[in-house]
Amino acid sequence: MHTHGTQEFTIINALVAALIGLVFIIIMSFVKEPSRQKINAIIIAGAGGVYWSGGLGVWEYIFGAVMLFVAFKALKHYYFIGIGWLMHTGWDVIHHLYGDPIIHFAPLSSAGCAVCDAVLAIWFFFGAPTIWNVFKKQKTITTA
Image (tube, rainbow, N blue to C red; front, side):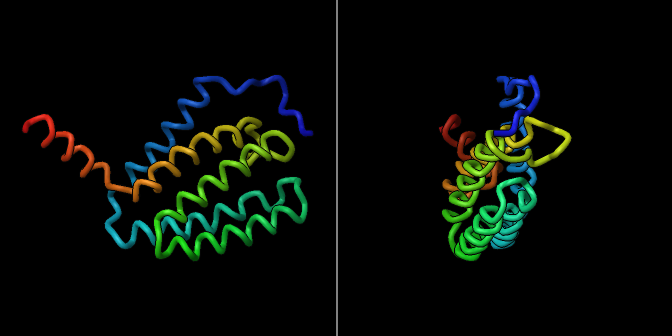
């Protein structure tokens, strides 16, 4: 088990990681469909390889291959993008506990990535709605 110094993952770390996920969602809300889905399927494919030298040997490549399959399915279904981010969340936790962090000079980066990825997964399970439509629906509900 790799130790990550004496640093603890705090509520502040989790809030910052969640905020990073929200910023990603805001940025992606500017991308029109079907490009939003295709871009995020490609991102999931890349996410499968970010740990390839992360200390878990051949398992890194197996995970990457599974993520490529999920990314291929994600080209047609947002649900698979959510699945990919949940898979990456689990991989982040494993790396935080047993492997190398996603950013080598930031020991808690894998734990933060797990929080961020979980936020993204939720958004994708809802079909990755643009935040502008969410606010429009809120406005029409409050004015009705």
